[in-house]
Amino acid sequence: MNTKRVDPGRRHFLKTAMQAGACLAVPYVIPASALGANGGVPPSERIGLGAIGIGNRGRYVLGCFLREHDLRCIAVCDVRGDNRRRAKDQVDTINGDKDCAMYIDMQELLARDDIDAVLIATGPNWHATASVMAARAGKDVYCEKPCTKNIAQSLALAEVFRRTGRVFQAGTQRRSLPNFAYAVELAQTGKLGPLKTLHAHPGGLGTDMSGWLPAEPAPPQEQVDWDMYLGPAAWRPYTSKLMNAFHFEKGGGMVGGGCLEWGSHCVDLCQWANQADDTAPVEYEPVNGQLHARYANGVKLVMRNDGWLPLGSCPVRFEGETGWVETGDDAEFAASSESLLLRRGTKIPGYPADFHVRNFLDCIKTRALTRANADAACWAHVACHAANVALFLNRKVRYDPARHEFVGDEQANRLRGEALREPWRI
Image 1 (tube, one colour):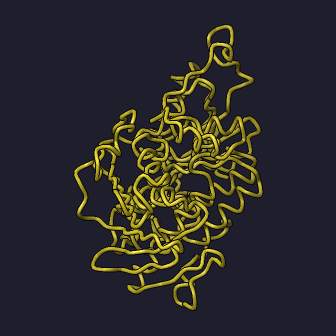
Image 2 (cartoon, rainbow, N blue to C red):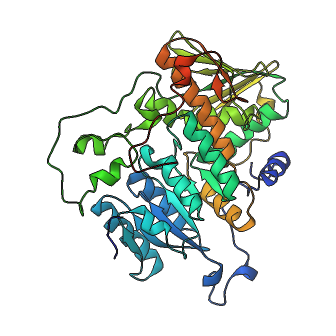
Image 3 (cartoon, rainbow, N blue to C red):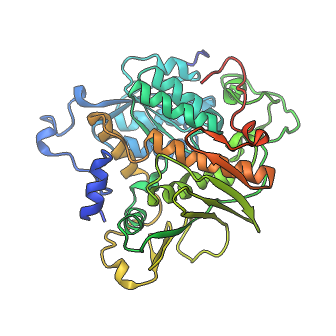
């Protein structure tokens, strides 16, 4: 142990999925011809995985990885001792040995030549920085959301993965679920008529600061490495409440932790429906408790918390000139016409990450783009961050996706990025 610091068969979805280097959103079966004599994938063909950040969400996604037979997790890393030991036990049980290494400092894990890919499920304060570090270390990356804290980080993330040629998958797993894919298909293929308005649930549109809580005695470093937990985030004294805070350093500690959490899902799906994975809306304005945005092609994006049909969490609604469709995590649909739903295919309720993980592993082998690749993730996050800027300033802002700046707005442009705590860099 090292603890030193340093419808799945739909023709259109198949076509678009293959263009993106994606596999179908169905359980993956490895052909017998690809298996070893003992029924397992030969060790030489297994992907070596390192898991960084293995709290509640990290353990769940790691479990999805461990169910894949062409992968072997060989190292786990977390700033909390209890998380490290629990994850090691989880991995060792699957591997049938005691060989999984434990680290506090992710830099030691990233230095290993036998690790091909990493799962990053740390706090959001680390997501972009750790992803960039991993890409520069030659690792492919599956990163939980929100992937970035601001516009500058979003653009830097996409640039680094383009330059290094590493595979990136944002943890926006709803791109790999049939009900959301089918709703997007209806929007993209004209079944709703020309698109007019897209609706996304942002999970909150108010100010959400990480805060500075009263100091508590810091535990031993082996138990909790507080300095490494903060990483590039601004320093503050140790407090157990902040360590367990769901909203810690989301959206740069500025506005709408919820907007970045749900927005990185729901706005992302709207981006996909509008075929806008390479751009973002050009206008953002707070309107009566909602955030209204507009794309250059005239399509409107509405981020709203209320007025949704009872179809589960993370709902989206796509409206065209001749029809509309709405869906959510229950995998149920509502639509303007029942005929729109005749080919809706497999129902998979909830929001399992298994299919998204499988897509990532397949793309590691083919070097194709994942469904939630770095460019798609970049622009979905830019849209959320720009919305946060409008909310923070409480006024309309205009954004130029080509110049990566707010138009004639010095105050808004100062909110595109923020300094990182030494010695961390992107």
